[in-house]
Image (cartoon, rainbow, N blue to C red; front, top):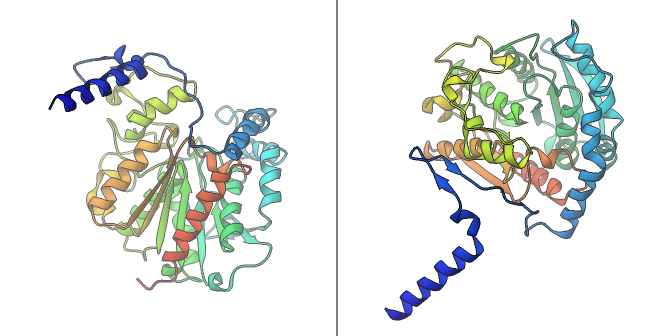
Length: 378
């Protein structure tokens, strides 16, 4: 007993010495923790190659993301948002991160109108693998339901097309400020229904990152509720299924553990907010309550119908909590769900740093997941 007491005392002493910052924290009766400022180094788990890639991102790639908007009209202060997006896209094509990604992943791009929707089609330059000739993936780009088509969509699609040696198509769905929910869902569904005329549903996968993941979940809910053939599998990356917090169109992701921590890590710490006082973003303006397509995370019966789902995030991603919560719900409901969290990565880090070893790891996980699930009769 004496030995156990001495051992416990040593452990407590080490905790107090090594974690003095925690001793300075204070907790409100509602559970809000006031955390003192502290320095956050790169994770000790990152390899030297990863550290060098992250340094290159900070020194070379990062500044270019800010420059892609230079000389382009403000999306919310122009009569032609489509032209503004095209201007941003052309600037993005000139960045080193885009050029490096294209050089690393040799793919061919063609444009088709599918279901009335402008759609980019990516095929590996070395050819589609024989086992994938009858398979296709639909990539739903991110960008906050306002941007991302024809540029971020490239980065997210080309890596999977090349590594997986599979055709990937990316719809340019309608977004804010011109359009509101469910415009994006309708466009992706229009493409999906056309794809179903050429491919069997068990040979189709759908995935997206950030708002693309949220839209993928919304599209999956629409497919279920309208009794359309379900795809073989889906991927929710950098975000989970939208779940209401407060008023319709306001989601729990923003008020989660990772939401606050990620904001602080990103240099934008914010005060604790009341979800009931938050306003929805422009794409979700004037949405109605009790819409399972808008917020499938509110409805167990909708989530329970999801096909096998791959969920991916990083420990520094402000949307990580939504990914984890969605995985927990899907698992509880009996849905086959795989969760992968990468140490030290932020929001969509894997998509926009072609030098990062973890980027290849993440995309190999994606490719292997869809390879396991596509081609199986449902």
